[in-house]
Amino acid sequence: MRGIKNEIKRGRPDIVHFCLLEACTIPLFEQDKMTVYVHTIHDKVIEIGKGVRLPKSYHRFAGIVEKLFSEKKIKNNNQTLLSLQDMTFSELVDKIKPDKVLGLSSEGKQSSYGEVAEICTDKTCLVVGGFPKGEFFDSTKKRIDALRSVDKRQLEAHVVIARVLYEYEKTVFM
Ligand SMILES: C[S@@+](CC[C@H](N)C(=O)[O-])C[C@H]1O[C@@H](n2cnc3c(N)ncnc32)[C@H](O)[C@@H]1O
Image (cartoon, rainbow, N blue to C red; front, side, top):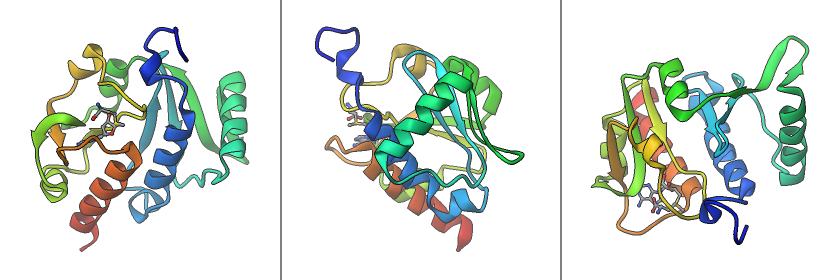
């Protein structure tokens, strides 16, 4: 990635794969209580279909995403597993119409995982950076209502996703 624009945020689709596995293999997702989207640096939005089981193997995942970029939809029988649209982050928020947009970043206000979960509702849009380094772009920050940090250290995105969703899941199922 060296030398290309925004190099520190590029070249790690394996991070997105890991994050998706964390988010899409839990009861919250399997019981259709959460929708998952990936917004890319080139303003493409991937919507993960309801209850989709993504490949655990990175190579199979990469193959499916390549097919998605060429065909715009991956279907199985009548169900859309993955779909791809041209959309900015702001347009995605307009489409989702959340009650609030909560960004997770080490630069946010310090909170526990439980506190983050408590302020989430079933209409909250949680935003996590699926990139190795760097911050959200200003255009993304403009649509974020509150930024929360769950640790003084910078953590890997998949760890933050797993922990926040686990805490939120407890408020839904218990
Ligand atoms: C490797 S980090 C990117 C580095 C970014 N400078 C940061 O510390 O948030 C990838 C993503 O994980 C999440 N993340 C990492 N550390 C976090 C923290 N302490 N609190 C909340 N979210 C965090 C953020 O969503 C971040 O965009």
